Image (cartoon, rainbow, N blue to C red; front, side, top):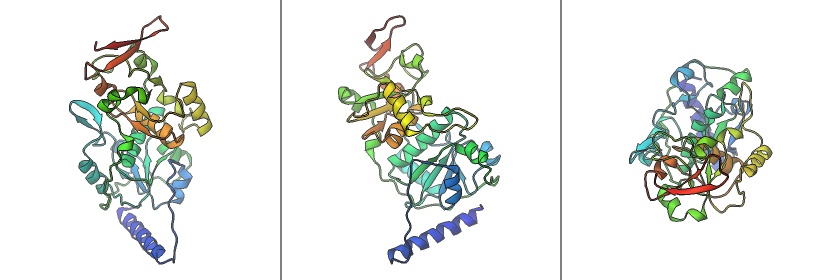
Length: 315
């Protein structure tokens, strides 16, 4: 779909919405967290954001999709902590430039070939929701699923018409280190990293020390997916079973997901908040890099060969 046809679709949609005001036409847009390739093919009015590399995008993409590589501006280093949500005004302009209007359904497309592909997609989804855009979904199966369904593939570079997106910041989806530390016993904290990081046997380069936030449970981000050439999210029953087995309390009053820089933790946020509908779930985007920056914050490690968990301060 060329850029001009995208504009025509947008104008048609606005006309239909306008008619609905007078009772002539009724239109509804249900933003499920996950949509299938078939759903997307049947809803060409959705704004499709392809977050893969530009090379992957030009090699083939969903017709009409706009390229916005995840590595280009979706996260920022703030106060020496990588992986932070950029300034709201910056993101507002970026998202509008991608052609997003306030009333449009946005669908995010990643590769869909591995569990790791979904962390960027979940992070972009979280960003849009945190900035107040409710009509947003992930394409389950990503572009691999689209291709496997033998749907039309385009190779053009789509230029979007600037949208009217305006941010309406929702702080319920975001928590920082200071807020967690001030009332830690009131939060369920969920670590998405591999067990070696959770136990403190490995350390992320930017973190001051190894370990995890005290009292955390370890829900591996990769446990949310099926296996195969095309990777999909597991069904809700399986996701709930896996989360419960990992120690996640589905009745917790508030929860925070994290990792090293708010990347893999985005997948857990998406699973818990959007698919399992665990209320009051926030992403700790600074994660262990921000947590360990302050020597006064406790860090928990599991000493190798012992079944006991030790809390340590500083190094």
